[in-house]
Length: 308
Ligand code: SD4
Image (tube, rainbow, N blue to C red; front, side, top):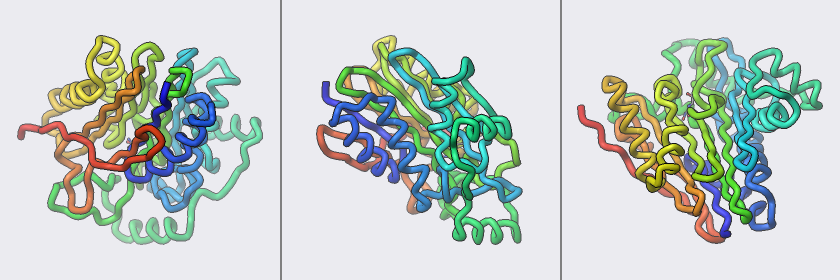
């Protein structure tokens, strides 16, 4: 089976490159997901994932992450984790070494330390300066691609990395890692670590992940919906569009708040879509990355039209 890797956003290119290399040398989808997630988490140029990401309203970086393994239908997740640069690996450790799915906050940190993860600074000087500027004139928690289409993003601040992999054995895995909404209320947890919302895998059908305004998206369990649709035989593109259309139907007054999805079917076919409103700010579009044979391709995904 030809391996496939799909990731959200332009910086998903790095994740796909790392994932593809591992998958083509025989790694499992699960290992490829973790390594690709770690690459982005440790890259300080990405200001919304792991090290170097934007903090909460107290200036503290709180990370959400999850991982799901197709063959055993296992999942692990971590919420509001501080001081650890690789939260997706903590999520995997929770999955593999505890009977639980999710640990949160200080006790998640305690678990990570007991597992040998290092306490490290998450803020970079660049992000500290942006936080100080935000404190002078605090605005509500924001996501770069949110807001009216005509407003250029002032402080581009958010994009979760969603990761999907299909390995040569035909197994699926998914991951999600993020610092959540920039300048969020301390303790706020988004959709990313919620199984069925930020990500979902059914090894017999497909995998999906979502990014955007988690406070909206988690009301619609987007990833579970997309995978359930694929299990019913729906094409992955259509599965993404149906899940987003459901969200838009349920929350008709919140269409400007941006949600996007990627999906990967068991046979390697992929889909991707975003809600139109909220993703059309100048310089912003719904961009995702995917592999195609031995290449990594970055491009714009489809949009689900919203009716005002
Ligand atoms: C959250 N869904 O915490 C994340 C943010 C995100 O692109 O994905 N932004 O709500």
